[in-house]
Image (tube, rainbow, N blue to C red; front, side, top):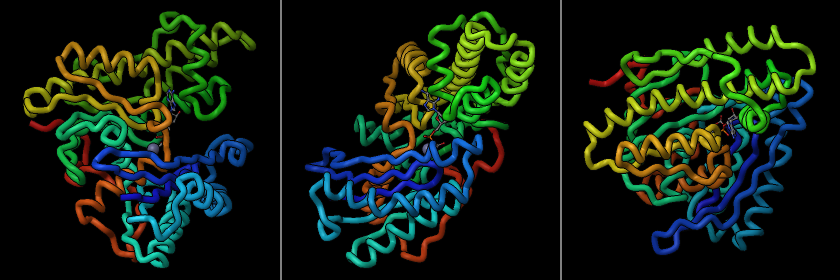
Length: 350
Ligand code: KG4
Ligand code: ZN
């Protein structure tokens, strides 16, 4: 199979073709066009600008990806696009393009959940088998889930307020560092002392696997207000303290989820991290240590497949279409689309 995947849910226009040769996944072409420059003057993502930028970039990117893959529309076995959760303007641009190609070339269409695409990426990169425990950490979502099959997710915990990526991004903004904040903070943190500024570790010792990052943001704001201007070392120290606090919290809550997972899914052998924050080097090292202590494997896709990309959408489309899960061409887009529809409120399963 060769599936074209289109990602337009936020501020990256991303397109890829992923295939499977004798059950081996193969990324044939994978391109990302970032919109950083378009949004930079506004200090955040402007949904209307994002939608228009997707429209500007998408056709060229699709042509370039097919060119690199050496394929035409007729060679495809399906077309997938992110249909949510995300900014609806961008989602409409991406799904409409995908539906148009699917209709014209008479190929099946897959409306992909962006979170499911993050969740399944470890199967593209490392052929991880179900069931596995997933820490999904991105700019808009922070969740602990058990993945038992395509379309089958059980949420163990979620953030009560901000997402982990949001904590990085908001802290970076307070420190006058560029967007996206995760890489900017990690880069400054390399020259910093992570013990200089004590920052809160929320929900410590509390039952369940829910998370919280809003107290951290408040504490960072107070620290920044007390910093002397142009004190580069203090910025590096605070960046290191922020990165450590976020990683400590993620590792603490994931450790609880690992214990629950080991007790309830003894056949499960893998902890997976996915989403943009899973590109963080410190987090990857610490989660690998946590998994090793629990006697299970740790898998995180390569950083370029953790942040938003087209290959993950194509792969999720491929996984769905080979199970016969095609969507109709009047499929809708969804600003919110939980992976576990039964998990309305943060809670811990019994
Ligand atoms: O998955 P993603 O690309 O987009 C969403 O679906 O949200 O995640 C983007 C988030 C941003 O908050 C960004 O700051 C964070 O991932 N991020 C990182 C790193 N690279 C990206 N956070 C920490 N360390 C990184 N190296
Ligand atoms: Zn994402």
